[in-house]
Amino acid sequence: MNIAVVDDKSKDREEVIQHIMKYKKLNHLDFHILEYKSGTDLLKDIDNKNIEIVFLDIYMDVLGI
Image (cartoon, rainbow, N blue to C red):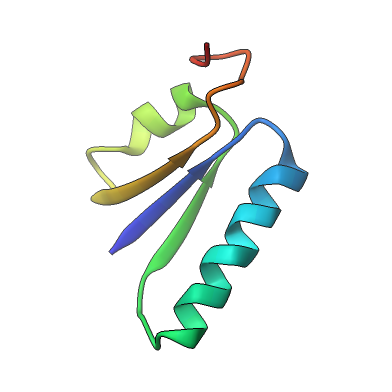
């Protein structure tokens, strides 16, 4: 399984990834985390990378609100 974390701020991406990794370790799960700086970058990969879960920052300059 692939999980995408999309945020234009690297600090915020890292914080989300740390929480996901903690959950992964506690529950003995196997999945990959993919990082994206923008929604545009995510859209380039979403079909090819078989991404099943997306953590998306909605306050981004590109494809945010």
